[in-house]
Structure formats: C-alpha cells, structure tokens
Length: 136
Image (cartoon, rainbow, N blue to C red; front, side):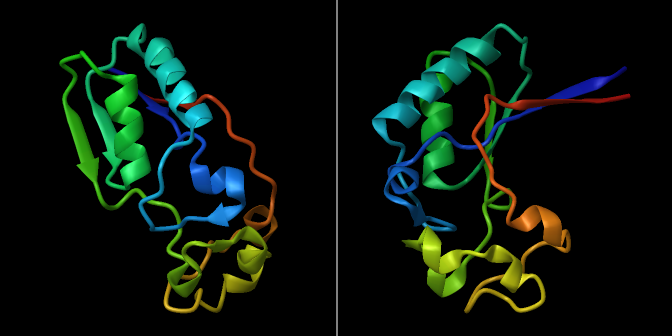
C-alpha cells in the first residue's frame, strides 16, 4: 500500500520578516505566518491525514497548534527535523550567514556544516504551501 507524506516548512516567522537567520533558536510566527498556518490547516484537513510529525522548534510547534486546533490527530514533535544549526550565527542577520556555501567543508562557528550540494546551498528559497511525496 502506498504511503503519502506531505512535507511543509514552517510558516513565515518574525525573524524571516526582519532578515534574521533563526537557525536553532525558537523563533515566533509573524501575523502573516499565523495566517499561513491557518491556511495549512484548511488545506491539509481535507487530505485524511493519519498523524502530524513536527520539528520541536517553537515556530513549528506553533504552526501545528494553529493548523490542527480542534482535531484529534496525533502529533509527534521531534528535535531531529530542524533547520541548520548556524552555531554562533543563530539569530544573526541573513547577510552574515550568506553565502552558506562557504560552510560546506568548514562548519558554521560552533554549528554544523552545510550540505554537499554546493549549487543548491545558495539557491534562493521561496516558501510554498508544501510538497507531497508518494512512496510505493
């Protein structure tokens, strides 16, 4: 039987709007982000979800609380699915973290290294309302 996994990133945070690279800091959703969380709930509730798996980061937990309020879906928050740990640069201006490709072989100071896909690390990322994966 195929299994479908809907993947969503966290909504827009106050830090995103201020140009801050939150990394592993808690962060909070902005008003726009809370609206996107409500849209996520409306969009995903009709997809017969069996469970919600979330990052343990505050902003991700906040999204789940808004999007799936009033449902009985089981929610599992886990510390493993997170953004990159920018180490000492968690909470720094995005400009101080960029270009992230310089941290592919050298870790962020006090943090982790980036991914080996150099051409993707600095690719612009635009928020979108989720991705759907089907495993057969």
